[in-house]
Structures are given as C-alpha cells and as structure tokens.
Length: 339
Ligand SMILES: [Ca+2]
Image (cartoon, rainbow, N blue to C red; front, side, top):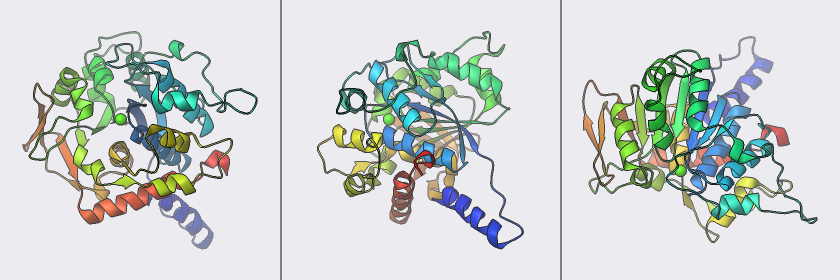
C-alpha cells in the first residue's frame, strides 16, 4: 500500500514536522473492464475506489466491453456503495459477449427482507448509459494533454473503436490523434509471454481488436500478462473474515462468494494491471522496450526493440508476495464513505 500508506504517513508527518513529504499528483484513470467474466475485475474496481479515497486516483469513467444489463448494474451498485455515484459508466454497443447471469446478476438481484433491492443504485436505466467510445472521446477531449491513464482488463473492442473513431462534436481529432495527444499510458491485463504462447482470454475473445490495438496504439502500452496474476492469489480467508462489518452486505464479498464455490483463492490478473497503472513499475520487473504482436490464434509475442513502446511485466517470488500483501491491505481497507 505504498501510495495509500504514504498518504497516511504524510498526514502523520504534518503533526510532527513543519514540512510534510510532497504528495504526487493523482492519476487520471479510465477503467476498461469485462466485469462479470471473472471476479478479479471486481477486486480491481474495489482497489480503484480505495485509491480514489486516498487521493491517488481521479476516476474519470468505468467503461464496459461486455454487454448485457447486469455488468452495468453491478458497476453502478459499486459506484454507489463506495460513495462515488457520479463516476460515468459507458457501455459497449458492439460487445463480443452479453451477460445477464453470473455474479453481477446475483448481486444485482439480491433482495432485503421486504423484497426490495438489497443494494442502492444511482442509474435508473442502464440501457440509456452513454456509449463507451463517445464517453472516451468526451473525456479525453476535456483532459490536459498527456494526462490520462487507461487500465484495460478485458477485451480490446472499445479501444479499437476509439482508435478508429472519426472527428465528432467532442473533438476535431481522429481517435488515433486524440489518444496520441491525451493518453499517457495504456496498462493492460492481456497476453502471455511464456514459451507456450498460450492464447490468453482477453485477447482470444476479440483477436482482431487486440491485434490492432497492440500494433497501432500510438502511445505506451504495458502488459501484465497471464503468468503474473496467476501466481498472486487473493485468499478466500480474507473474503470470509474481513468484510463482516459491511451493511447491508459487501458487494465485492457477495460477488466473490457467488462466482465460484467457496473457499477458493483467486488469481489477481486485473488488479496487477491497475497496480501498474496507479503506482508504476516499482512492484514489478519491467522489461526493456519492444513490440507486441498477436497471431491469428490469439497468441502474443514480444520482441525487444530500442524504438518500441511496449513493455511486459514479470514478478519474482518475493515481488509476488509483496504485491499480494499490498492487495490485501487495499481491499480490506474500509471505504472512506463507511468510516
Ligand atoms: Ca477482466
């Protein structure tokens, strides 16, 4: 919890010293998610609210690359419960998948003793939410140059549509020009760079989009691949023991319990991409620059190149342990709105 702890440390220092350590600027973040496929998207979103609580993140939007009502309902429930009901949510009109089952539907369908929805909502009609690509263009156009970080932990469908988007009422720039001007970093959970070159799910579901985004995105992309999140597993014991304070219930813990039969420890693929997006490379081993290519089967390949602007992350055993401890500290922290 380096940055979150640094905020607490800074507050303590104010009491004891005339000069507190200077706090770094918060990250202007857009979260791009296939919420509902795996519980790690929900863990990653929980972490983002904690970063917002600590002043480390300015959450500009949550964009969904998975269709259906329940993923959007779940994000709205999370925004509302964590005290950030006004964070814009974008939906995908060209989604490769639609979903109204699984943990998002479970949490959205939970009822209280009187049969009313257990969790409060802010959005009355999720089908009327803005299109993710339009929302990207609106937000990017309004932000300072080179200031926006995107953490993408699902498919590349919205990103390729943004890349290919023409000038519109939000900006005279094409999508590619807008990205080059406004986006500082794209941090993705995608791919696998072990010798097996096994196609990774986020790439596999929309191979043409991944191929184009990883090849043509004008700025820096950092990949947290399958093998990083695979060795950092969030413990079931934390889900069972650390959220009993929550009223009426905890929307992450309830989702986690509904996703697979408890108890299970889950890989933290998506949280690793959020960690890099917000806190940078100190937690990881970061590769030299290079290029990433995607073959027709969805396998990913990295080739080092001095002029490349793609990097891939890896972790040692020690780094993996430190990251897990950090994740548990962040996720088990009470949201500011509940303190
Ligand atoms: Ca995901």
